[in-house]
Image 1 (tube, rainbow, N blue to C red):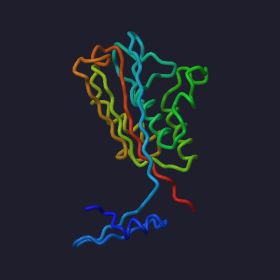
Image 2: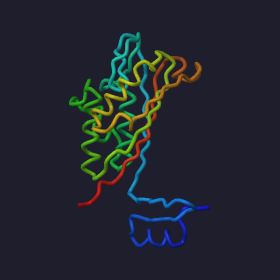
Image 3: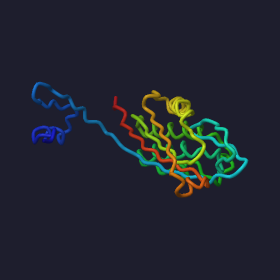
Image 4: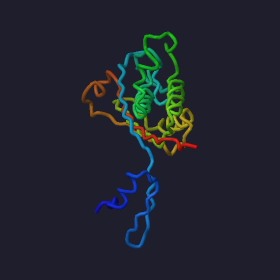
Length: 194
């Protein structure tokens, strides 16, 4: 049974933003907002002797990401998800790896600038969900700190940020420890018009 009765669907099409749908023993209030979803993906090759930075946190490891910036694959995927949600392209469009301005830049700065673009477009993040894929090192001990760093940079509550990590059971480039991959999904909502 669908929550959207013919009557509710008709009201929504006419521009009503609050619908009251009586259900047995309860009345649910559905607030219809302009939600948008973005998806991001990034990958970086790993090489000996480089620093490893993930989710804004420096992690002790013998390998790090080869990149123009600091190589924070998780933040890069998150920036792509946020930009995609508001149809503003991708991280390479706004922060090209051909520009000396972004050489070695802290990806948290890129995330802050991405948030400025998202807010200027009239949107606010609701929540984000990120997944890292790498064989080593284990990043579970760092996840809470990563979540806090991202929350601060984005200006949202830490409970709106999820980060998970997985190995690939020694399969693929992640499993061979040749690289690290990250995926991110961002849900944003339109700011209320005054």
